[in-house]
Length: 309
Image 1 (cartoon, rainbow, N blue to C red):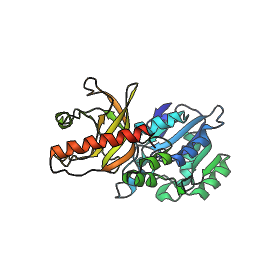
Image 2: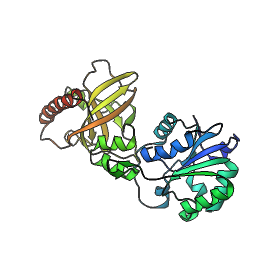
Image 3: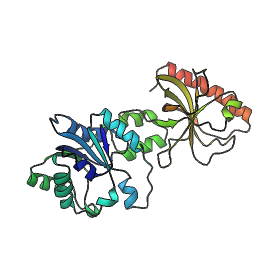
Image 4: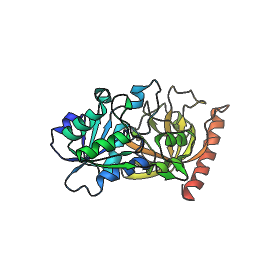
């Protein structure tokens, strides 16, 4: 899969395209339905996702909504779904484009779209004046195929990025993963941290939660951690360490239950919380915290041995 940083860059390829439209935060089951429409039976056309580097909602309003995935992870998930190209366009450059000009100029002239797919509530063009009825009319006039995907139900609830965020923020990891269609994860290079875990007898793998991403409910989780080709059971704390010197920003810190090797600082790791164990809280002493961590580890072993959610 190729990644393009502008519509103009992709236009130079001259490929005919089947285009999925949206921001696709989380690439959840609803987004996957939209993407499937351009990947299935694509023939010789390219399956292309047209999305944005930054959230349109953030640029159009003062509300700073946290994201579920960064652009790197978003691209990885789309690649797994069979997408040929992702265009991370600059929303600021096209937000003043008239709805009809967007269809005729961007979709037809630049992307050479033969089919378009989007969600039922998709809006486009200056001021968001273009709606599904507008898109249906223009695609009909221009001979472009159009698929409009209806809401996807998951456990009696419509799948949406806001619903996924709410589930993560309430610690309902298994429910969030079902809506996502993949495991929520924290990813990155292992930080050395402050070594407090080591002094307590629980050396940990520390991963920063990137600024602007959703922070799951603070507390302790049973988790899976993948480092290279190895996967370990983990006791993960997501929070700010109120007992041992509160951090300014939340950190994903994991004790690997099955690891007895050398320090892993600098290695790339993927932490997937699978079950919420308890809330984060401040203990009266480091000894009390150490005792609680031991109990957490036993609880996590039972969860993982029984088959995690």
